[in-house]
Image (cartoon, rainbow, N blue to C red; front, top):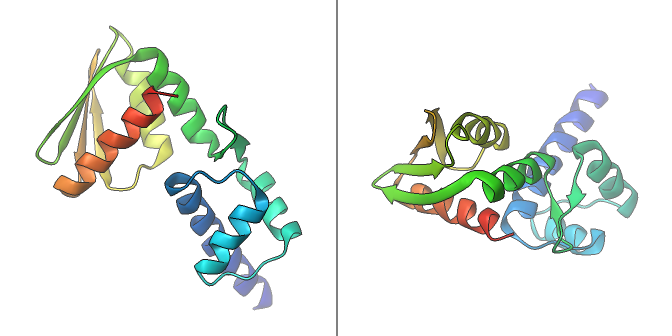
Length: 148
């Protein structure tokens, strides 16, 4: 029973870390520990260090921690995405010819908050979002990735 509780705590803490990394520019383990404390998680630097390794967090060029799936997505978005537009709850992404499938797979792997699903053609991706606000947030996140 104890292992199950520890596993659940670790999973919840790592989900919180994922959300923190996505939402804030976290550059140090100390910053991450502080943000976790604000959310009610008390953990040691060693625990945070283990989580970083286990989750495969990497330092992005700006010095902030980044999720590995988002680093791959950032690379593809930078190289292949030409335009991003929002129409209601749909985000439309235009890529270079032949680029949509790879970008779409990376989008799916990144599990973007607010994105319900994706469809890709040759050079166009459509993302169905939960709401108008979610569509705008997905668009903004892709825009940030393009500017890296």
